[in-house]
Length: 476
Ligand code: FAD
Ligand code: AMP
Image (cartoon, rainbow, N blue to C red):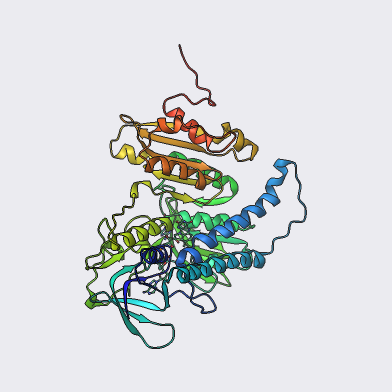
């Protein structure tokens, strides 16, 4: 059987690429190996089955529980007798995942994408060997192959996974009861999100992070506020704490970690290993295919996602760049359009990152530290949510918006937000950057009142020292 395009992997990179190819009139197949816990093949990859969607479903439920349980009193509402039902909460998450993965199967059908369940392996000359979950392997061919095999959690010798006691992020999305004390190795994005879920549901949560710097990739002024607030909420975050070993003893975990004060022992009931992800490329191509891998096992690609092999492309977590669903999806669309002879580009400078904690942290573009490091001259504007009427009305006055713009041209170089709904607010900054906007463009835009967005407006005004709702002493 011959296709115009075969996509290996049906995560947000691969399934989006396959649908766009089909929209462009290309005969397309998409192969995926994922099976749900009943062994049923499901589309959607990590994002839908064990990443973005289930984690956000649990973050939402746990925040709702915390609000009922703890925050109602701020509004003058006392709720007694709120009962947590973890299996129902997990069922809700599973139902959302099932609906969305079924939705992708329906999209494939509607667009004429052939979905093939099984393991795909690239062979020479754009041939692909498909090994179904049961039955004989077959070989299919295409003019183009898109590799979108995604990533897997990193495992470390210091904490080998064990049953549901020492788990990776997938395991921590499935616990059916609240452990008394959860340990987490790694205070990165995934560690903080999962830690937030289980803390809000009632667990004591300790995060051990090897690096001295918290969230080193984000703007450090924003991060300092985050660290303070997360600790206030009860997340026990230890920086500079390298986990050396862990052992399951009597259904709990004995941890040994080292920091600047020496060695420490810690006992927890459950342990989550959240130390990053690595590209899933071990079996992606036969040796004869000659696919070039880059450092860290990523598939080597150029700026257009072309691999070293003619007609073979690679996208998503399996290639360089941030491991984010939306980055992979946009690469998928761009590659489909290139295959169809169109020109397409992904603007890697305007890809937002989000941490779905409470408050959320979101940013796009360069941090203050990165600009200082590159010697770029910039101006900075800042606006605290404490001065936003809407944020006050929402009881969400923690955090701030920060706008960084080029000192000479005023072009926006970065926007950093910590606050409620930062994940939604950041889109305004992404659009401004996509249009090559200046802080003055945002400053001169009319924002609805009262909204959280006004904080972006005021931060843009503050770049030029003219924010209205912050008092600055002026000398005449
Ligand atoms: P994947 O989603 O990993 O999909 C790859 C697919 O390829 C899988 O279905 C796999 O089974 C299949 N596959 C692999 N090898 C083969 C093969 N040889 N043959 C056939 N099929 C194969 N990102 C965000 O942007 N926002 C978030 O909020 C977010 N939250 C996350 C929370 C958690 C807990 C985790 C773990 C991740 C989160 N991510 C988030 C990251 C996001 O899930 C990934 O960036 C995204 O899924 C990558 O998409 P992908 O298509 O490249 O790969
Ligand atoms: P992220 O890549 O954002 O998911 O973050 C993973 C974090 O885990 C990184 O900040 C690492 O420094 C941290 N990490 C990796 N190995 C260890 C370890 N053995 N002990 C503590 N933290 C670790």
